[in-house]
Image 1 (cartoon, rainbow, N blue to C red):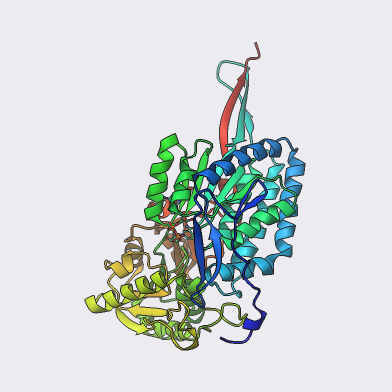
Image 2 (cartoon, protein in one colour):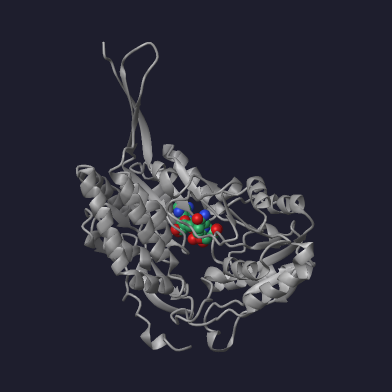
Length: 492
Ligand code: TXE
């Protein structure tokens, strides 16, 4: 391993427990636990108790008690508590970034999700003491008609392993700002940073039970969604799981917001700044979080006129990635989440090469040497990819990018939209008319022009098509956690 390993913060001593109503529970009724494996070494680093139906019920009950206390506080007090939480998160950014590394091996140089968490908290704290409702005149009467926006009460927030802190910011923060309590279920594969966030909520002075953190797998997650005390579900994860969640939510007809996967197109036009586009595309493609991001620009569409020149620049940037120990601040590329992910990613690449649906330009192998024990896969680029192939149509969720050639703007839009997903799209051009025109034609919830997916608390984020529905961020993200009541008062 490179320098810096002797400075690594130790993982939490196991067993890591649940946080329910302010209590830390390390032994669950079902006694189930997850042996957490550190992806950079393939070695176990701690054990995590997993919530069963019993603990889920405790968490929902604790949440209802805390929610009633939360809404008994005035809005200025609630606002100030969320600001205090943002301050406490700020004071612990390094610790949270280190826990992210222990969770899923993301390089400490990418502390993005911890920083996002603070930004979202500050943003949504600003909504708490602002008007949430309105009044309207009514036909044929002088009655007083109020349109109120009220919290649901207790909501479930379910996070994927690659972004628990980002989901804490984009989902838990607005839920609290709207007056709800939260039962927050991180993935069993990455619970550490989420649990620490729950403790920071207590340190900031939020009522115990307002944020309950219950690591669990599918069973615990299903019990949470089905619990009669849950009034809304915010799910972030893959489409297959989303279908299970939506079916379970139908039990009590509970509304669901789904933030799902993507197979985002990244369009490089002939007039683009190729050097900048190459750097942005490498970062947004195989390098950021080793491609384990819903926003991964995994389909790189390049205009004929600049194809050879751009591909050469792009591959050079990809091959310059600094690969190694995620705790080394100089490292930008870390492992993938598990052995299973290594196998799945390499199988995807091998299948494409064997079927002739893509030609390997770089990567495609597991990384050996002193990283052999970890789950490291080379940043991988294939060219001449068939856009209808599995490689181009199925989310790889790893450091693999497919390059596809296009001839004109219409061809680019057609290829980009030829996917069941619609989460992000990226456009590189100097032509303002083309940027606007293509952005409007792309079937994606977020379009990024000459930049990477720099998610902000202000901009609504979410999917078209099978990338999900509902939004996080901004007033749209807040309203996902408010329900509307119409009150009409007769005035005689
Ligand atoms: O998802 P999974 P993962 C997507 C990304 C990829 C996926 C990777 O594109 O598709 O997330 O994350 C819990 N009932 N996004 O592998 O397997 C499970 O324990 C209730 C999109 O974690 O779907 C975990 O906590 N819960 C996103 C969560 O569901 C269940 C950004 C997700 O698990 C369950 C980041 C069940 N039956 C990743 N089964 C975006 N769009 O912003 C599992 N879970």
